[in-house]
Image 1 (cartoon, one colour):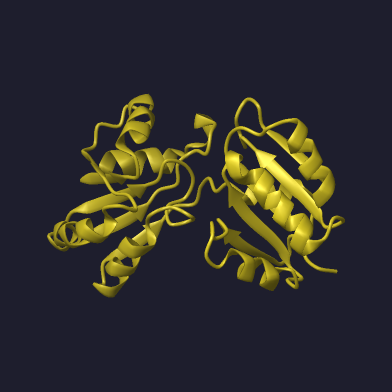
Image 2 (cartoon, rainbow, N blue to C red):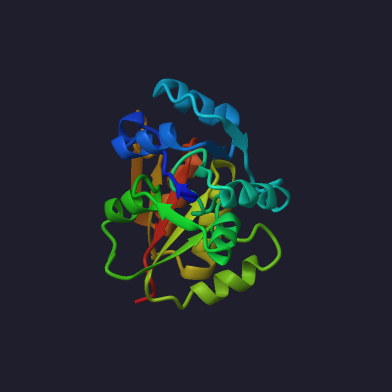
Length: 223
């Protein structure tokens, strides 16, 4: 029976791979991977021999029709990203929507997602929050920050290490120096750390200690 599986993969520590995820990746007819080189190492580690194809933001529009045809013919497929849950700031939404529209069953397995441990680790209110992902790089960035300055829920952002100082500087400028910020870096990995404090304090910390690795920023909502 045709089905698309969305399979989360570890964000760092391979021990976070679930038994079910390994079984599904072994049983499906083919796997779609954001980066076949990165995913190839994961599949080799867990002795998964399933055929793998590249599926990323630069080719997903072109490849969806061919994938749908295979699924309509009764095949099963698993979509994985480089790390975490597909479609969360990664490819996956377009294919999922196309499957739903074509009445092909979709099954998202539970598993690793970077923003959840970062939110819980932050110590900030988490009964209500808003996930913003990556802020616009240029166009629309100021407009979005002005809008979020009045957001009362805890906010979650993804950021690359070379843009962290710029983003923290904008938080100081638009949200105020005293707004509480928590930066989690390299979650589940050997050098995992979480730095908490006011926006100005966290900015000063990373100005003196340039960041490396994958980063999640959690920001206090407006009081």
